[in-house]
Length: 486
Ligand code: BG6
Image (tube, rainbow, N blue to C red; front, side, top):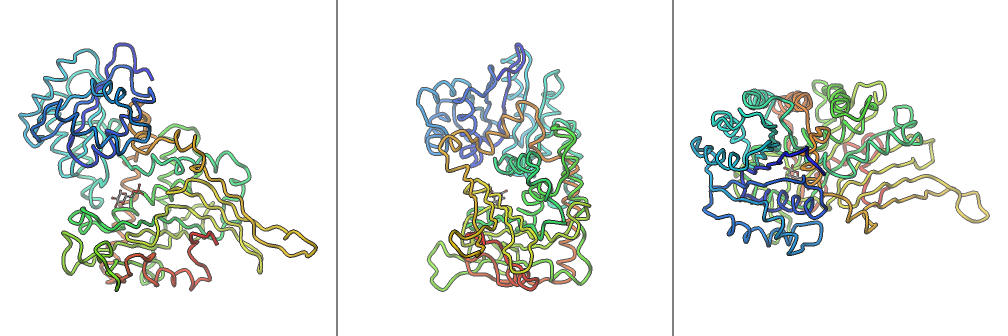
């Protein structure tokens, strides 16, 4: 990949000694580097408060890379990549320290494409942006891009404030909001499958679809993120961003072209078209849950309330099941069930499209498997081999991740996102309009949850949410499409 004649791409990581940098960012750089996908001339400037030198930092990251790189770790590749790495002791809450960063940029000289990755807690986004501006770093004629991770605010108001503060330093076009779900192979593939197969696109509507299910179940609990999670909950942690991204791709119209603008415009229309839940109907549409200790508990079966940094009487939800409708000509009237939870029985992220069927016939089922398996499963009906006319369900199961070459060639989310940012391709990032639209819906929902004092049901760790989540569907003669895809 070339990055323009004589231009150096400088990637600056704020929060260089954090988990995200060790587990995701540096391994992503290693993968890109080993696959010759980094710009020809690049530097990675890692900033941290810890008193390391570049040499000692390189020693620290080596075992992390050995553990977390997707491609084979090779000493000589790591050595070559390390030549582009520099560690600088900087306290990013000290405005004066930004002159140290500027000095390094000045030493590099020339024309620079600069990407600032803020791998820090969100309360530091605005102060860092401000200091970058105040220090004069953003004044010169280089290209400047800033990458930030969710949460983009904790509600619409705080998101607007953050946006305004970021825009005092960067224009919106230069702000890359990461939703790592957009970097997942199969989430991108939903669009390809829909828009390149008349077989699917022709039946992707409310005449043919009975219901849509989007599930993201995790086996892990809140791990060491109790303080953050307890203030957040599953609605804000997963639904407002990742699951709404999936929902918008599943429900969108075909974009007029493949530009970020066209794709995001169509996605926003879906979220804007979500129908607010009618007053008094919340219990039919929403189930909240919190995992609790099981009788056979060992340490890993801890309940939410026993996790570190959780308020003793916390009612934060670790599970959400939601029934939604969108008011679009394509999907009007089709229930869209969304479900996500921590400490569930299995790890599985997938989208299931269940089609309408005549009575007595098993409905067709299309499942897009996002994680851990990647692939597409299609169930249909056929005659049972033999002399009787009996019809039985059969299936085609395309397992993308089962093929070794696919596994090797599929970039991980951060790898894809970093590469897209270098190339200034914003289609894999969340637009400001998407942030606004999704907060609008979630804020309203949370207000209603509080006003209507909606129950948070306990569920045993290791189960897929409370029974009420199953009841929500069974009352309508449906069920969650489970692992066996039935
Ligand atoms: C993060 C959430 O954004 O996504 C976590 O904050 C969650 O709570 C994670 O575990 C899930 O991501 P993935 O890629 O493991 O499905």
